[in-house]
Structure formats: C-alpha cells, structure tokens
Length: 295
Length: 316
Image (cartoon, one colour):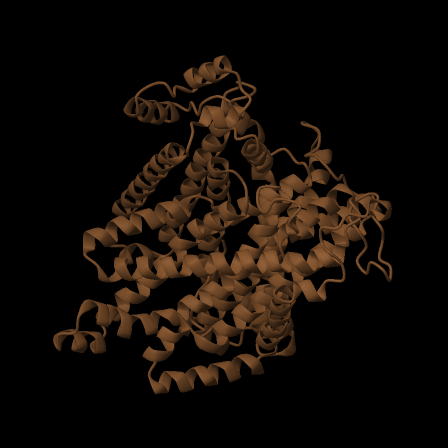
C-alpha cells in the first residue's frame, strides 16, 4: 500500500509528510507513544529470543510463584513463566490487531470509494448497510458472530474486520464526496481521464491520510477487544498466550497469587496507552480537525 | 421539526428491520443447523428433532422469516435452548442492573469530565491544561476490565471495603449501591477522559463567539463566562456523544460485569455465547439494538430541539 501512495504523492506532499514526522517526534506525547509502540513491535518480532523460557513449558512444582530472580513476573497455575507468556502475548495482540485493522482498512477504503464515486442507488444501499451495522452495539454483533462461527483466532479477526469496516468506509465516502467536486478532479475528468485513474491517482492519495490516522487510533481499541474476548474465553484459545487469557488465569488465582493478574495488566495498559498516544500525535501532526468517536 | 422527527424515526425503523434480516440471514449461513450446534455432536437424534421442532427449524424458510418477525413484534423473542424460559423474561430480569450500572458510570463521569474540561479551558495553554490533556488521553486508553480487575484486587480482596461479586440483594438499596461502586468506577474512567476532552474542544470553539466577547467586555470573571455562557453551547455535542457512546458503555459492561460476576445483559449474553444458546444471543442483540436506536434517535431529536441549525441541515 505504501508504494502506491509514494508513487502518487506529489513532491510537495512528500515534503509535508517529512515535516509531519518531525512534528510528531517533537510532540512529547507522540514521541512517547512512538517509543512504546516500537518497543512492543520489537518485542513481538523477537519474542523467541527475548523470552527467557518456553511459554508453554509446564513446571507444576513451581506453580503460582511470586516474582523472583528465576521468574521475574512469577509463574501461573501450571508453573509456566509469566514473563515469557506476556512477551509471546504481545505477538498475539499485535499480530491480530494489525492484521485485522489492515484488512478492514483496505476493504473500507474500496467500499468507501465505490459508495462515494459510484451511482447514487449503490451509495444509498451501501450507506444503509453501514448505518445498520454501526447501529448494532459493537460487542453484541461480535458476540453474535462468535456464536455462529465458534470462538478462535480466525473468528476473532473476522469479527474485528466486520465491525470496523463501516466506520472506515463512511470516512472514505465522506472524503470522496467532498473531493469529487473539487476543481482538480473536475479538470481531470474534463480532460477525459478514466475512472480508475481519477480514483487511483487523485482520490486515493488524498483520502489515505485520514484513514491512516483513524486506523492507528483504532489499534488500541482492537487490542482491548482481543484481550477482552480472550479473557471471556471467546477469543484466542489457550494454551496460546494472549494477555486476555493470562488475565483470566490471574483472576482465577487472584486470592492465592495476585502477581499474575497485576503482571498481565501491565503490557495491556502500556500498549493501549502507547498506541493511543501515537494515534493522537499522528492526528495532531497530520490533520488536527479530524473527529474521532468512541466505540 | 415534525418532518425531521418523522424522518429520523422512519430511518431508525428501517435500520432495525435491516438488522433483524441480517441476524436471520447469519443463522442460515452457518454450516449445520443451530439445533445440532447448540446440542453438540453427541446429542441423540430424538433430542435434536425435538429442538428443531421447538425452534421451528423444520418449517420452510419464508415461514420462519415471517414467524421470527411477527413474534419479535409481539415481544416474543423465542425460548432458551436449555432452561426453556422465554428469552424476553430473562432479558427484562437483568436489564435494570445493566441500566443502573451504565447510569451510575456515566453520571460520575459526566460530573468529573465536565469539571475537568472546564478547568482545562479556564487554564488553557498553561501547564495544567497540558497535564489534563495527557491525563484524559491516558484515561481513554486504559481498558475498563483491567481497571475492574485491579480495583477488585485492591478494594475488594486486599482492603475488603466493597463486595467482589454480584449486584447486591434485591430490595436492599444499600447493598446494591455498594455493589455498583467498583464496576461503575471501572466503566466511568474512560468516559471522564472522553468528556473532558470533548467539553474542552467544543468550549474552545465557542470561546471566540461574539456573546462571549461581550460578556468579557462587561467585566465578568473568566470562571463565570466558562460555566454560565460557554458551557451551555458546548454541552450540545456532549449529548450527542453520550447517546452514541451507549454502545461503548455496553461493551465495557459486558467485560466488567463478567469480572464482578454481576447479573446483567453482559453476563447473560456471554454465558449464552459459550453454550451456543442462539435464541438468547439473538434476542439480546435485537433488544439492545432496538434500545440503542431508541436512545440515539431520542438524543438526535433532543439536539434538534436545542439547536435549530441541526434540523435545517437535515435534507433527505
């Protein structure tokens, strides 16, 4: 996707995005968020080398231990090393949330362009579908889909993609509608440019910016949703480590060994704060007027 | 105003209809029928046949669609696969708990959020404003069920100040209020952040308006201008976001209710999902969607009443 954008962005806009990066890094919130996010990405990528133990290796004799030099974050009810499980959990969390928001963003982009630029009847039909989907309370829609398909990682990604598409498509549609009548698009059309050319070379580069901001602000929401559903045992299935199912193990042993629940909350809170700060920073640096609604 | 109201309500009805159709279509997209999925692979054929008959799955599809719609319109949301109780009864039994939880959570968040927002406007551009900004973004970012787990650990397990599970004894207001404190705290934190930011942003827009300049020229104090003149205008977007945010409240309620084993819509529906209890999941989704549409539509109408510009803009 980035190569398409690079090819289409005029030199002026490219200079502006270099300025945006500078603005992002000079804002303490944005810079802090970027540092946290990069650390989590590195942690997820290099999990097998960073984690001190095998996250699935049982050691029942040493179950539910508190923090020690051997196990910095203690062990869970099966004696597995909590720190290693949390490090592998960052792979689960980032893998699912980045895949799901990426796919949803791409589909939303295409549907939004179609609705905004296509014939009016199609626009009306798509808008009705988007409105209906987004008037379902997100969590209930997600739970309904999980009931039908059964819990699991694939279902989880599918659910997140389905609940996210309408928001992105509406954003792109609104942007397309305003750009459609802009002078430079009208000029291009009067010179006989084809629809794919107008959409690909003129509308796409202009609508992609806001989408990237909204996507980055949605990543923490998706991380929360993944952890929440895995906590309810309706998302990532054990024994695959996920921050959500580690929290659930921690809840079950809350009275014997609170270390587990305390430790499992830390990466979840840190990563959602990191991604939110980064998203806020990106918004301030690129498009301060963009409004984001709670989900 | 009347045309606007009619259009808005008609739109809500059309959306509800589409949602119901989509829900129904979803069940038909599944490989296998809902009855065998609910009963599991080891169910006897007789048991399966009985459930299929009870759920009306043996009838032709158009008849099923018709039954589904006409039953829902009459307030019959089907029967629980396991307990055979009417779904609507179960929903109405726990719905007040969730509503109470949501109201308390929004209530304290509204008071604190608006106050923090006003504070940020009065001290805008200063250090306090920056700190409040970072604080509200952090509050938005922290997942409510982590707050729920941490507060459960601190206030219920370690300090033993408040109950760790349940919604209190029915009829005993004291115990119900004690039981709602921790869950409402966990859900509300995010909203304090949202509201503080929203109030600050919409108030800063208002601060440049002529009537504010006039008030300032009359020598009114900045605090009085903010609380008496700017807040009145700035509260309109807040009402809109509160209504839309009902869906978000419900999401956190699902997780937080589970953490505190608190009877409510969230615990009802999650238990049904793990048991693949279709009628309960579908009934709850339908009920809550209808309620949500009602809230959003009512808020839109209220805003149109408060702000004539909105209804003038609405054209088809």
